[in-house]
Amino acid sequence: MKFHLDTAQIYVPDGLPEEQALARTTHMGISAHQDDLEIMAMEGILQCFQREDKWFTGVVVTNGAGSPRTGLYGHYTDQEMQVVRIKEQKKAAFVGEYAAQAFLDYPSSAVKDGKNQAAVEDLALLIRTAKPEVVYTHNLADKHPTHIGVVVKVIAAIRSLPEAERPKKLYGCEVWRDLDWMVDSDKVPFNVSDLESIQMALVGVFDSQIAGGKRYDLATMGRRRAHATYFASHATDVTTGLNFGMDLTPLIEDPSKDIVEYVLSYIQRFADDVRGLISSNL
Ligand SMILES: [Zn+2]
Image (cartoon, rainbow, N blue to C red; front, side, top):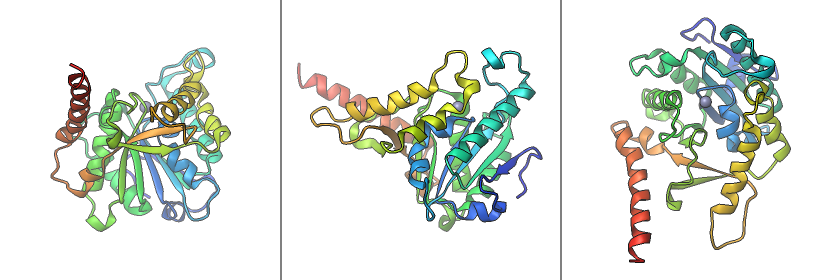
């Protein structure tokens, strides 16, 4: 498979040839950085774990060069950091039994450049080859600029495909900003109650990000547990782990739909909900 950058690569944990490995994909996660997939796309990973008929493929768009580093990794150069982060993502792909894990290896600056079409073309190639039914990526209200760069490129990539080759569902997921603020009817709840130990392992292998006191492992599990309890105020918990998704499918079904207006409509419904609750008490 030929990507724009020579340094891009595909890792297949069970050693199948690339195209064959990708062809079995049913669920795909596309993230900016190593470890985002395990934070945001756990529903897809769990649905495919230990299944013969469902397979998760991960795609990481950036090279991880700008990662923060402390402790054991404090003296690492950008180059060494990229090697560590790819190794960690491969560990996760192995533990999580992914169909394949692609690394597109772009610097963040390219991802945040709206004019850069290379990553869009690489993503379109991957999606056309893997034909996932469901794609998980960053949500449009995330606060990390590189995450927004990725979701915009994912939407562009899918829109560039003929309708028959587009995934059935596209979800924006939680990393930097959760989606608890959306009104309940807008939330797509992902039940991530099962296989807690696998979930913990999958976030835990990214030691270079956790070392030095950034406990993504605990925070990620904590967010899932908190959502499970706080989702329904008048009912007992039906799950022990929840993530929320923003349904971005309308944006790929109708390529003329304005992306900014689409996410602002979610914010408007949130504003209306806040206004309505207070107004009814005045
Ligand atoms: Zn990230």
